[in-house]
Image 1 (cartoon, rainbow, N blue to C red):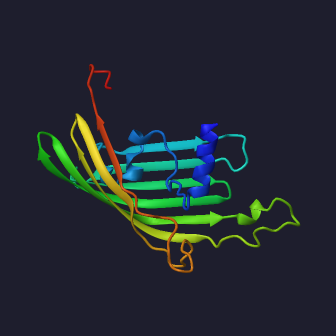
Image 2 (image 1 turned 90 degrees about the vertical axis):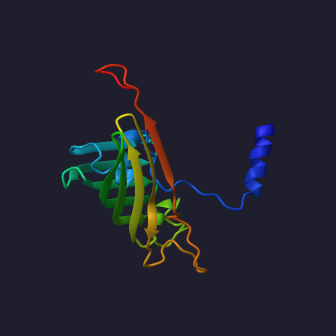
Image 3 (image 1 turned 180 degrees about the horizontal axis):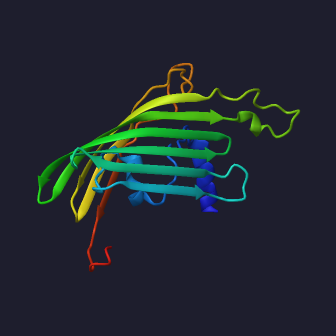
Length: 212
């Protein structure tokens, strides 16, 4: 009963609610290039990953996410380049992203390297709001939101050696909305806010075949 009262209280008192902007990806350590451009080329060889996730299969409008990353070192291992392709479908909304990544690495000490990366690309949004009309003769939405193409620029830092890694990035450092699709009449933007992401990990070598 207390939980029900608390829920009703929160619903009545909350003025704003925000959901996450990025797709839900469980295998973060295998998709670091998607979040941090400084990761490009740090594997010292060409590296590619493919990810597909279908949540709540069987329900109409269930989230579906496809992600493809590829990167490789260049300039005698001093730099790296990469490509991200992503498609995320949630209900009546669909988002497609494409980014190019570039990273430059600086040796620090004791096999430790600092990588600085930048990414640039665009997000293409499409919404089919008319699909939310419950019946043909009951038009809640008269038309769909115009599709929008948003240019984006991101930045990241990545410190690593054979034992550990740590990184910080902001995939949406600069976002440009030329048609003001995601802004209200007073100019306030409701999406594509800046997010800062922190990642870290440690490799514990058990033997030649096993690493935790």
